[in-house]
Image 1 (tube, rainbow over the protein chains, first blue to last red):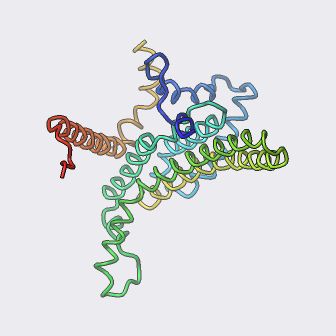
Image 2 (image 1 turned 180 degrees about the vertical axis):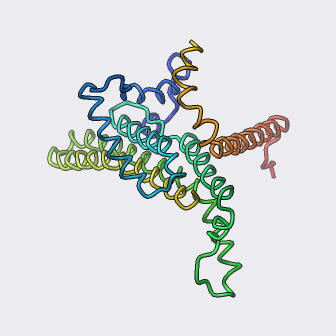
Length: 226
Length: 60
């Protein structure tokens, strides 16, 4: 049972060849490019959604921050579509791998920090000390703020990994429990099945929310530094 | 193939790759440095474990 539980998280190979790159590139096939002035229904709906998200996310930024719009919107589309596709049975979700989430979090976080130090050096250094700190507390608070700065990429990556992995594991466990209970007591199996349906609805929400949270936090770090 | 790649990818994205994402490239360099350090430490640990096959807990 333990072997089966974690089997969906190993990087997939087909006849010895790693196909994880193909799986990561797959969601981009679901967003066709806009070639005409008036597109078909799928592209129009996607464009409307993307415009709505862009307006929502990018209004807080100044001109310099808004140059990151392409990166942030691509990020939320990628994480959202990858998480949602992972809810299909027997599919592999790349965002369950910590390596991939660290690969997304570290360059983006480091980019915002370096941007801040490059363009607004004094303001970036001032972030290490909140306003109105009493004098004796200053050394300790600078250390705490530095640690909290370096924790940011780890927190970004681990938050996404843990949420998606935990959701998938729960679905596996409760689905297995439902199957096992069917031979013992149909009522309990039915209750467990209702729990499974509710959990799946929750996982849909979590998939989208986690994408939003990841992108929002990167956008916040950008806003502090740009 | 490379010509279509240049026209469709590089030409529209050139200001992004050359100016806007400069800091992200530095971040990617930092990330590759971290990956290199972790891999080399792992290789060194595996080589050390392989060269000394005596068990860590000796028979008392």
